[in-house]
Length: 291
Length: 236
Image 1: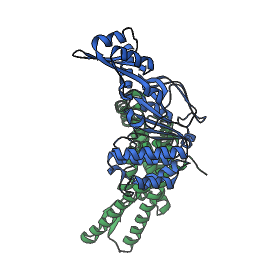
Image 2: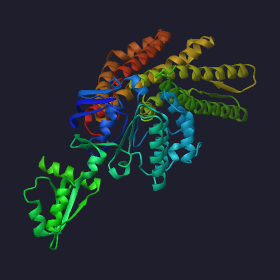
Image 3: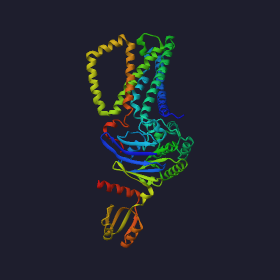
Image 4: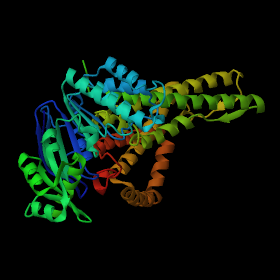
């Protein structure tokens, strides 16, 4: 479905992505996480054919998307600040969505507009941030493109609308399985939907892992300083250490296993799994220090 | 059957259609204003080509900030965008100037029959001809010139960025002034006075060259102004 090999990209002389490699053959929901400036948006633009790689290969359904009109048949890319004409209302946006997407589902688009309660005749430029995100979601989902890329798809949505988005995304994915790429720098917002998560860090793909596997990573040991220090002595995967009075907290890049549980009980140290967001932030910070 | 050119073409068509409605309404407003002034204050001479000529001069500067980004973000390519822009603009130049000339001829008929005291000016009057097709064609060619030249300027500006285009334009402007003051002015005046039709068509040809060069420059153009060369982006 998508294949990226040895991808390099520069903005002028500034390196934006280096040696990115990723292959995904299955129509899954993929999360794309990275800190600000990591290269997420650049990667999405390259996948959508908006930018030309300096080196390497991007293959989507057998085509290289840059300046390739056939790409329109396979890829829909909804940007974070998606440009809409100042003259457009919802009806116009849907009409143009239909012109540009061969698999466009007008009935589904109208159902989504009803669901999100979007005013059809109001100009999109006058929409709130959340409403602009919703119209992007409508176009992205109704395009039924085999590869649908959404940059920050929950930006500006309240908890209710976010839940609605999760529901409709999973529903349409079940009806018409296709590859979704959802990008966010708040992993908690997209993690419940994603089967796999690609981590972009330091201008390259740092990891591409099953979400469940990734969620197991990152364990926090909390206890008296001496006990915790003994436990983690010589461990190479320490991500974070904090001391408070006579207590110490250490985050380790490992999964909670029975062995860890036994040792923790033996040393009277509390053991818990950290949140995915904390784990990824600490992991990338540690990598940065090493680099 | 789905055509990938359909979307970019229709987007540009609808954008120009909306702009045309605005421009033609302004033109019509000017005509009505002239007519009222004529009836109130007696014989009145004016020209109505300003809004339409002005639009095709300004429109190139609106393109890359608005429709370019819309077409690309919906999946169109740069080539599709440029082709649909050029084809649609030429089409709307023909439509707008046809409207302009219908008003002109109508006003001419009314003023010749003493029904309207307004006398409109037209570039076609320089040809000492009454052929309405020639009048329309002159308008078409001049609008093609304005659009083509300013599309080229804006394409270069978008591709190279503000600083580079200012340096480039200053240098070209300097060379042009040297040429113009030495021998160019005489040649241009000679061409204008003795071969007006050729002069107008040379301008039209320059406009077409501007469009062709814009296509060649922007078919691999950046997403942001000066983006290929500056190395700075708004995000990541």
